[in-house]
Length: 516
Ligand code: FAD
View (spheres, rainbow, N blue to C red):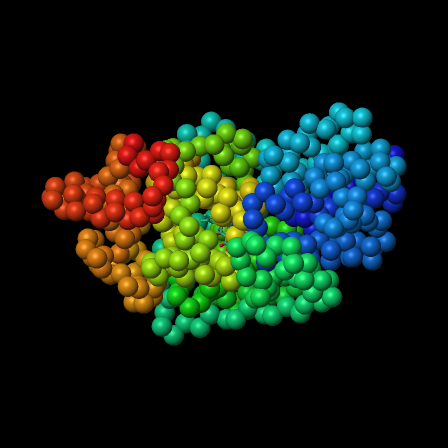
């Protein structure tokens, strides 16, 4: 027998299940196809990173003596859908089966499964590059009333042995988040990321992307993503030495000037397979044991990867396909134009969008508490917001983007992922960032021409969704404050928020409305 091994653009790992024990006669296929590149307008930096990383990986395989077929976007005979292209290649090379590993999207996994018993059968394998499989997650979730990340995470700590001292967590606590909520200190100096050399492959790809995708949102100029394992390892080493020690305390900070702060920038390399989550966590753990980084930083960082990343993946695979259609708060507004233009006077929002445009990156708190929070407060439809997040970030893959956007940000899964929405007013942004000092709005005012729109939007959101949220014990305090406001104050807030929302909608009506 002779298999065609289909390696997808986010599976660029030499220890991928189908590559590890590949028979000598196998043909490995890597395919650039239009179907995958076009259904949302991906950021040019994201497209360039994927294409350059795929082309480098194909080169590495060839150097290891593997037979590789690489389909390029501009090949005349390219079938432009992954399934059709793989089957075309299998026939061309006389292969009698196609082997593939679980992809990052439910849609594609379904399409592959439907071909299992085809004349040219698809043989499908589990992705072994994560700490857990979807079956592990399903077994953990079985019979539980709530699926809180914290409990999942503790089980993964025990299972992996990471940051464990016998059966106890290192330092006597599972979670050091309490120490991890500081705004950026005035004297903090976030390190500049290493600059990666652009070789001939990357230069070719950058030219191709500039030519074909210049109508997409996003600037290609500052492109600096790792496209090889070597470059990704350089980013990892740089993070461990220069940023990890401060990762914890400034994890939630937001800066008007600094896009990366003390974050790792490793999500794209992890997601496309240049780094494994295990090696990244083990390297961080070593930094703790060798006294190079404090426990609150290392625990916080490992929790993001061993906890959150595995958890959202488990949720995705066990809740799809219905997950994608959920809309608990019945949000229907289309995405405001400023998400694409950055044209807004809210300084925090403008900067998050500009950084996204320039870098195909914004850190977690910008995604959650700035662009996410605004969408939540404005009742943006989950589908519209998810398409935006999937398009604009270099690390965006549906399995991780969807639960974060639909569940964590929009609370559209009815609280499966988070016990309450992360809604916040201007006060939060003022506490965690230096934006408000440079903004034309005042975070301390709720109504009036200088009031930060987030304030009235925040109260209006709570009032509008009281039926679904007021009974939540974690929101009791805030609904108490709302109830204690005078009717006159509440009226003024409502008017202020509605005027803002009406301006968003312009002349158009947007099938739905904010009154449920
Ligand atoms: P760091 O802050 O350095 O964190 C370390 C690593 O932890 C990340 O590289 C990532 O692998 C992991 N991680 C951290 N938070 C999460 C999380 N909530 N879920 C899963 N993994 C996490 N992450 C993606 O990888 N792809 C996405 O498409 C994506 N979409 C998001 C959409 C929204 C609305 C939100 C709120 C978050 C999203 N995240 C996504 C999670 C997180 O924001 C990014 O992983 C992170 O900002 C990437 O930057 P970094 O590598 O510098 O992360």
